[in-house]
Length: 178
Image (cartoon, rainbow, N blue to C red; front, side, top):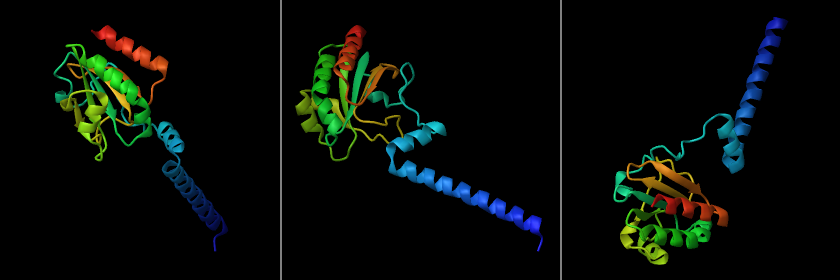
């Protein structure tokens, strides 16, 4: 038996075992805790691409090519946050659809959503509510509101339930687009 070689092999094996334990702990944290997952993503720079103001939305042109500016509301009917944001979405849809240069379009992201019920709830035409598969897009959260110009460039983006101040600021920004 060669003592220095055995010692080196033991230390190497211990280092590998510790590394594997850390990888398993990090993976478990990322799976179980959303905040941990986001922390790991940020530290490892694994943050998925998101919609950036001033850049192309990479969404199908059929969603925004019919008006100078389109307000895209991504939501689902089974989401508590979307339900809390519903009154603002209704107001936003009505303001956007009251101007010829603006258009509101609601994109439902869950297979169980009913487009006609959503259109009725928001008080908008049924053709302004469609199903949308967010896989492979930059959409990460619902509700999300995008304001996109005719070329598909994002002019504004808001995620989640907006505070009264954020709602007012977004409405002002949309009114200034007119």
